[in-house]
Image 1 (cartoon, rainbow, N blue to C red):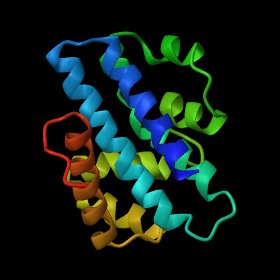
Image 2 (image 1 turned 90 degrees about the vertical axis):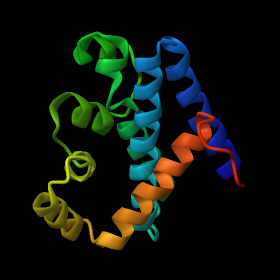
Image 3 (image 1 turned 90 degrees about the horizontal axis):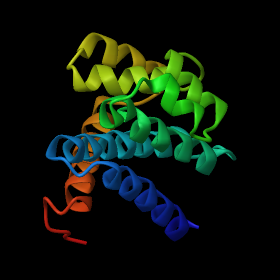
Amino acid sequence: MLAEKRVRQWLYVTALAEMDSSPMSQELVCFAALRANFLEILAQKYFAYSPQKHSEVSKLFLVGLFSLLESMLHMPLQEILVSVPLDAHVLEVLSEGTGPFAPWYQLMIAYEKANWALVKQLAAMLRLSSHDLASAYVEAGTWSLETFGILPDNG
């Protein structure tokens, strides 16, 4: 099941990377992949004992991955999301910034912007420590850079 999940994730990332091969778009895809993996790692910890773990983790991966679609495709997000079959909660957070995944999305953005007061508040709400966040971001960054061949794969 894990191998299938990784293949699916790789396909999502590859499909996005193939949409536009310009350096800026490739940079955005790499950053979106980092966001996706960051949320995935955090969600694995948060949903560790939940029966919906795999489903929620996959959905949060998509939230991160598709969070930069508007910039990547140079189209309004509403136009893009109409043609993408996504879970209702994923669509809701991407288009309106609301719903059950909103705290995750807000945490991701606050962490990137070094808004530490908001990061602390959201992390507490999601029962995540500062160590959880830092280690997830480093791991996600490394994974993203390795995925795009910027760093050699040490695995």
